[in-house]
Image (cartoon, rainbow, N blue to C red; front, side, top):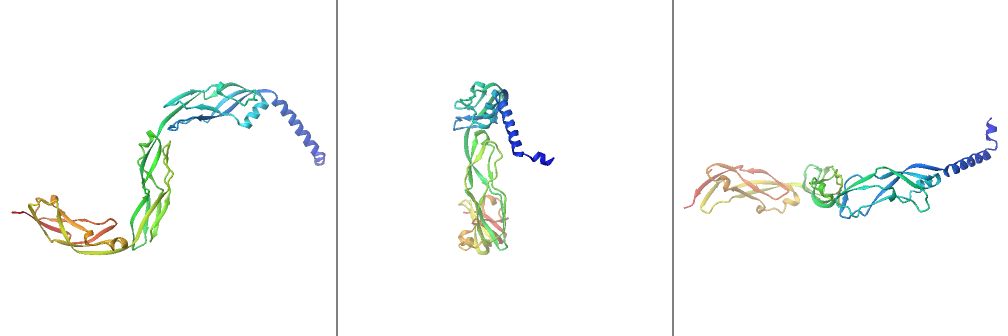
Length: 309
């Protein structure tokens, strides 16, 4: 049986292919009604406008003609449904007409009807932009004895563009969440911004860097710093007991080494102590950024207030 099937196999295959070809030729010469999807292309959208609603990607139509022409049209995909938006203001509803569909010149196909959709609504908005701060989402942990003196983004703002009504809801753009551990040196890393989950809004393409200044910690003592009085009227005398204080600043080597006693300002505010003569108060201390204060002694100071004669 197997030998009978394989005998003259090449001739048999050719006969079958020929029969299929003849059948296909006959069928494609017949006329048919066929449902066809035609891509929709929006053209001449004003440069200052943005389409904010969903537009169907295709229009479904019913065509009539020879099978061979329908097949050629399907395989060729050389046709689209153009919609001209040059005159659109805010929104418009566009009826879809079969007379607006143009097939290649050689085609004798006929559009019977538009099946769906029968019209398309297009909504546009003005395109606007604004600058918003970038939110840094990063955790930096140093090894013992080191500290992050400063961590910043460069740049620290980003421009967002999109539909004007949507921009008001966006107040910042966040970076990806990162974690740095056992750090003992400076950091410079390019960051990725999180995607904005707002339709019709996008972020300007720009490189964003995290720049962190990491330094070895040191302590620097300051002794006999004068305690000043601010906001004091000229006719008022204030005696502070004791009149000076000692403290220690802790920070990075590069920050602390150049600091002098003039870099620290200790004071009492007269407006906070007026009418409370003889009481004890905590001192205010202004210090440079990137350092912290420890071991302030004494902690409290007695203020004696008297009018000058």
